[in-house]
Length: 222
Image (cartoon, rainbow, N blue to C red):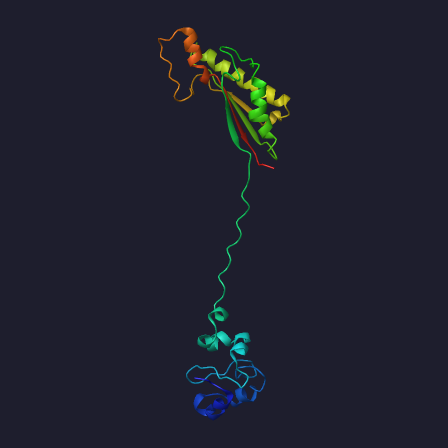
């Protein structure tokens, strides 16, 4: 039902619209309102329209949706769904782990770097460090095979880690971010199975994957 100011005048007494409200409805607002700018309502709670009422005027009025939600568009009276807060940019990093095989790094029973070690370290570690904005941590773990005395193998693995650390420091890696440890023979490469009946030379060759160095790098990328 259209509720106009003319109708309001006719039913003012029955609807409970005050003279004050009608007197102050002469402004070009689409709703009858009083001196406090409160919209006048009928006894049934309906807002009274003035002659200026149009859907566009009601949509622009602060009381429009409260009074005439059924007459206005859904888009006008429904608040748009809040946009989710943007997710923080993914943190990029240069974390990586490299395991250098025995044929790249160490001969049997030595901690000296092989002639191929520099190329392997430069390609697989040093070049990748250049992608780091900051190197926060470099862990170097030396390993040995199971041949020989356990305490000797432990010290051999520690020396291997120290040799790799020294090389990285020469290449510009900060010494204070490098942590070294020796694992001895305690962390053999999974899947390397060398029967005890092998000859010594075949056993040495079979266990070669265990004689290795593992380098772990942590830090944010550029």
